[in-house]
Length: 510
Ligand code: SF4
Image (cartoon, helix red, strand yellow):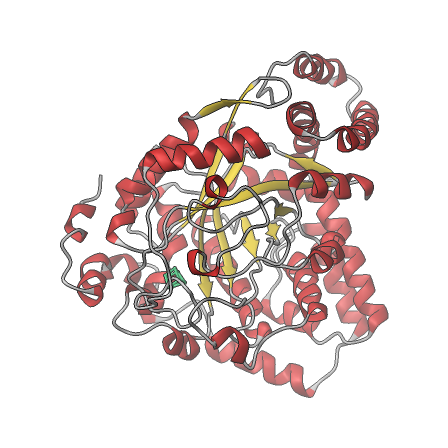
C-alpha cells in the first residue's frame, strides 16, 4: 500500500501538495513537455466556428461516421457539429444521438446514488462550498458506523445498488480511508422492506482527487468501480485562476494525467467531466475529445463515462452567479447531443443538479445514467426524514431535481425506458478494453437488456409502490418479448433466471 501516512502530518496545504504530487508520473504522459490538451488547436477551431457556418453535407457525413463506427470523432469533426445552428439539422443530430444511445445501451437508464463521505478539503476552488477557509461549512468525515447507517437507507430503504462515493481532498480521507469505505459499502447487507430479501451495494464508483499509481492499485484491490475525477475546466489560464497555486489542485498537469495513471494501475473504468459554466463550453467539449483520444492512443481505452455537471449556487461563493460562461438549458441539450456523437460508446451521466424539466428533456439526447432520491449533505440520507431536505452548509452545491426514485422509475417507464440497477459488467470483468469493443458493436446492449430486466424485477418486488409496480410489470412483459425475438435459443435460460428472481433469489446476472 502506498505510504499515505506521510500526509497525516503535513504543515499546511502547500506542504501537502509538495508531498503528494509525483512529478515523474506526470512527465511520463507528457513526452517532450507537450500537453495533449492542445490549446492552440482548440483556440483555432473556436475562431473558425465564429467565422464560418456549418456545411450540412459535411455534418451528415460526420453523423453517419459516428453512427456506423462508434469511434471517437476528430476534434475538427466535433467542431463542425458545433457550428450547427439550423434547428432542422440539429434535430437530425439529436435523432442520431438517440439512435446511437439505443444501439450501444438499448432503452435503459442506469440508476445510481451519490454518497458524500466528507467535506474536508485542503483545496481552495473558488466556486466550491467545501473549499478550505469557508467557515460557513459544517465539516465532518463519516465514520464507518455512520457509513453503515447511510447504506441502510440507500440500499435498504431506497433500493440503490450502485453508488458514486465522493471524497474531499484531505489527509483524513486518505487512500486507506477510501479503501475502507469501499469495503464497508460492499459488506453491508440489509433486508428489503417488501420482501425481506437481503440487499446491498454492488458497485462503488469513486469521485476523488487524482492519486498516484500505487494508491490507485490499492483501490483496484478492494473492487473500485469507475474512478471519476472532474477536470472542472481544461482551459489552463482559467484553471489557474480558479485553483490557487498553493493547493494540490492548483497543479493542472497532475489532474489532467490522472486517468493515464488509473489505466496504468489497472483501474480501467475512468469517468471524465468538466464543470460547465466556468469556461466556453466549446473549449471544454473539444478538450474532452482530445483527452479521450489521448487515453485511447496510450491504452486503447477511452472514458467509461462522461459527466455534465453545471455550475450551481454554493455556500460562501458568488462565482456560480457571476461567471460569464453560464449555459442555458438549450445549450446544455446541445452539449449532450454533440458529446454523444463525438464519443459514441461512452456512458453519459446527468445528475440531479439539473431541474426535472431539464432532465426530462434530455432523456432522448443520448444520456445513459441518472441519480434519484439523492441527498448530498454529509450523512444526509440517515439524518433527514425527507429525501428532498437540503442544507447548504453541509453540501457542495444545491440539487435541482428532488424526485424520489419511485417517481422517477415510474416516469421513465411511462416513456418506455427501463431503469437498470445492473452492476454485472464490472463483476464479470467487462470493463476497460474488454467492454470497449462490446459497446461499439452493440453487443453490450444485449447483455444489458437482460440484466436490466432481472434487476428491475428485483427492485419492483423489493421497493416499488403498487402504482409503479403496475407500469413496471407491463414494461417487463414488453422487454421479455423483445429478448425472445432477439435471442430465441437463449431465451429459456433468461426465463430460468427471471423466474428465480420472481421467487426471491437475488443478484442473478449474465
Ligand atoms: S471542488 Fe473539490 S477539491 Fe475543490 S474545494 Fe471543492 S471539494 Fe475541494
